[in-house]
Length: 473
Image (cartoon, rainbow, N blue to C red; front, side, top):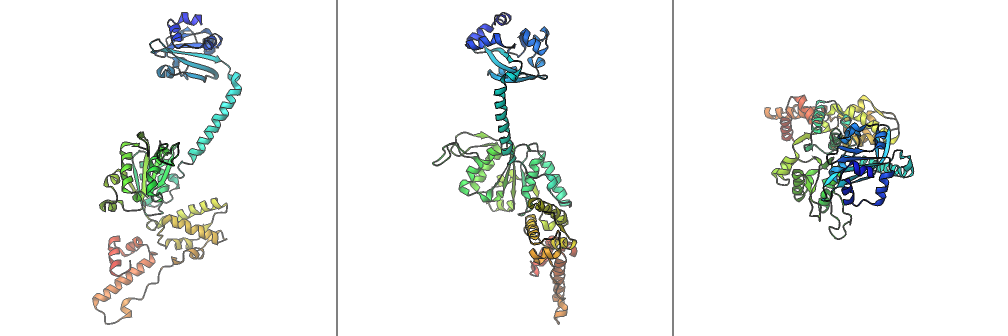
């Protein structure tokens, strides 16, 4: 210690100012190496034993500590003024047990830092380190398990479909994943909005952070604020003394998926808007504002634009959410994707039930394509699950599908109106022929109005007008 005080003037005052215990003073003479840095983290003194451990020479004096010991944390100690006690430091293929302390003057200003190598062979601490390693591994496993429960379950590769509509959705989703902007997913129930939200998160730079979902339609209005923003400890009678994190806090650093956002009450809409604009929340019963870093993806099956006009949805929140809207088409508008979707779903069903994957015959696929699918992909999943439970065959036919989907056969076209009645005016005959043509086209299109419109060379709007006139809607 006397050598150190002689080599580094002022250290004695710094040590005295901090009242370092006698035990530490004695350890200075017993340790395997000592290093001193100044307030700029440059080496001002190093003893012979430490130089031998590092293979260094006197030329290290005046160098930044990281240039000599790349993984040194001395700069952190000097800048923070806080010690790092009993740490492992690696140097090349060696590991040292070290202690790092800040050196402060009588005025409290940082004068530098001092580091001790307690052991150059950390095997001396093997019992302690073994227990520490076991606890650290156990904590890492627990964190991984918890994080895994909030990770994205789907990727863009699991968005099945080769049609132009699905290709465009994937392109837009990849673009959305590159930015932190809010995304609004639009589409009927069962079109795969949550799957797409998972996929966007998985393709983003937040993929290793939590993906947290909340369905606004499933949360009672009285509990919605707590679900979103959390509750401070003891906020009200019966509240958890430890408090409760809301979904924004749980999604910190990751993505928050707001499903059925159109069902959110107006009062919560205002608070959600503030959270999106200011990136901060205020838990119930707390006076503290908490900063949050969360990317929001919202989804709805409702017409938000119409709700804005009806004043049931805030216009400012709508514009904040719909920075990048993505509309998922109903299954009836992409019937060409049904074979690929059905194959993927049958493989998934086989994996879940530990059975062999089933295969659909061409006529079974045709039957599926003749259905109008009001429940979209979710309904298709239900139909295939029921078919696989009711049939023992590995090959599923049209008859198997008809058991759970009996209306797959196209309706029979009636006889032309002009043959059923005589003495009709030209206007009545034309109307009858038009009605017959509409019914025939709907039958050949399996009830899919967009396909029927293409068969007749009409726009969808024009088709809907004519169907309304003839009472066919």
